[in-house]
Length: 245
Length: 286
Image 1: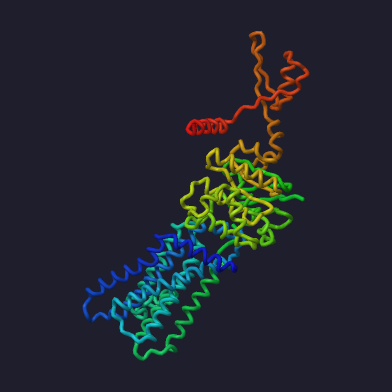
Image 2: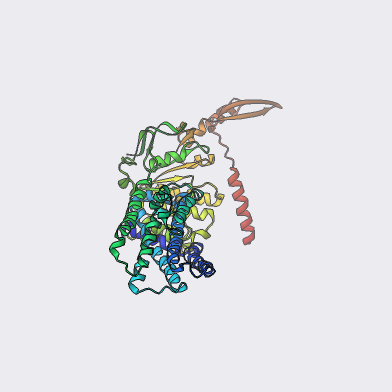
């Protein structure tokens, strides 16, 4: 059997037995989105709930996928299993591929849960085509988050090293990417930082999709950039994951 | 053919010289021990030999192959057991072994896994998660993962550290069986008593080789203090540690010259503790 598939299988079997991980990965977004609903219900009626609910759902998926994937890969390094895999004969490419494939399924499932809950809780009334597009965007973002987690994990020797990356990636994602306020109202330098973060493009697409006169071609560039992040981060991760000390 | 050949190998971490211009030859089919205290450079040496570490200078060849440039060919033929168990706690013992085994193309991997589980006396716990295992059992699973693909050389980094005397004896019995089947075992240890269990030993300190020899010859290098009391007068002298040295010294005091060798073998503290534990177990059984 292909090494990539073997590693993906192992990742899934391993995570199936890790209840804490499963709780965090699947239950946490459900709870956070519910808390968001409670918060939004307290806002005045003129606040455009619909336009912020889905981007925040995307952010929750992005944050949890990134952080959990990064920590789990760092654990592989600290426990010595990453080194052992390589000496046993698994290549760097198959390890990254295996992790990507394993988390790919998880990311799909997680984004499906979070997305369905958001649609239901916020009574989002869109056509099937729009909903499908929204789901594709959130799913693409979750895959980007997994790649980002793999990439960031290569800089950390233990779990604590991941912590500084959380504010570094997450806070700019909240404040500078158009999640809360439109990024074009920010100073140019702040807008440029926001433009470097993958969630910015997901939010752009989600906001566009909600318009009645939405056409795919309007957001094609954002789609291409989002997919570009997947391959770019995959390339960087394979470049930075070292086989030798 | 030599299993390992090391020529002028060095590894530097900043200002620290972990391996200092080392030369070493390890013949095939023996248990070769690298002995030294913590920080002597044992793990660094093993990592350089399995291709997980790039030396600063010098060369190493394992089974005639370069560990870095011919790593794929080499990894089919070597097994590595790291110092920490390096296992997946959420997988069973069997799943761990199968996972590492699948990295190489092995015929009848399932059958081979069953065989080594039996060999390491783990069959009864094969379907239990490794997270529920004791440290000693994890070591055995780790050994299984290292040997599942029938390697020609096993690199074992402190395989008996932090385990009880009973398990230590069991592991050494397994190592000896493997060596008898033709596997070269290259292991590191900081437990000096294990020197006696190796076929050949290199003593390392601060990245340098202090001595390389068979355990018997190393013992011969030692000195013993002999005190004889003849007619109430004590006479002390320092002699070599061999049985011949002792006989020769005793002959000076009238010991029968026909007896050319006298050896006294005392039990080590580990053997004494184990014997006490076995005695207690026997008592409980009765």
